Length: 397
Image (cartoon, rainbow, N blue to C red; front, side, top):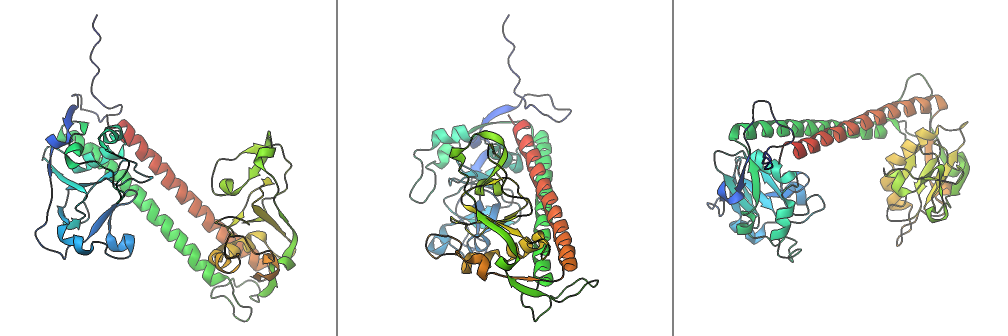
């Protein structure tokens, strides 16, 4: 018996749709958009592979069009452009629909196009974001990159890309659900930005930077008098890590290096624990020397230093928050100038301002609660992005 032909349908589909998707070349459902009508006062846009359309001012802090502006393409709402620039986010370039402007000027080097009325611009944009078309794009690229960083793919070759598309009604349903998840991600990201700004604002208002001047905000139930001490006077122990991963075997102790502290998966080794969760960790060497961390327990790598504070004098999380709020100051004033290292006498010269233990504890709890809210928001964004990735893979062929 002959094998039944495989149906050309996606893995996940809206109820009520049963017809096969049809294969089309992009050039069969689109028309090239080029040139402009001489209006040079329209918004100047550029495509970021990560963020989509952005004004040149917001992305580069200035217009970069220069004399080339007169050759820019006039793009209208719902038309699309392919930025064939290589990036970490999009190895073979990316496509975006113009949605936030009725008209705009975009670089001539983009491959800009409009679709026939039977096709959804958002559907086509999302199709490219699935990465399912990357293999075809790779075949058309003549060389890795040009001198201007653009991939060598001509407009004619770009139009030869083949894709599968259903009828317009199904395209629209797919477009709406992708739009919805993207709006939810944007909303969650804005909430995160607000929380981060809120914490930064509170840090400037509840931390004193001068013993002669009280912070703008303070808790009423305890003394508001703040003291000043060098960090070393509040420390009972400080040590540089000496654990090297190459000298270890698999074990039960977490290996603490810069990669782990910045979010990489944990590695467990056969060394004793020498760092407690209440220790403040500082990256001592490297381009990010001076970065401050907290809340890790394990065996400390050789590029990090641990500072263990006297719990009778200060709340270690309170001090961590103060150091973290002054991260830029540490980078600019307490590192060696050439090969970045934290200065040797850092703890002996860096000032810490602190109130009574009762106030420290309240500030630490308050900032800790804000950190928890920020972490929840970050997880929400990550979860929504996982959902979007799933939809992009399952709703398209």
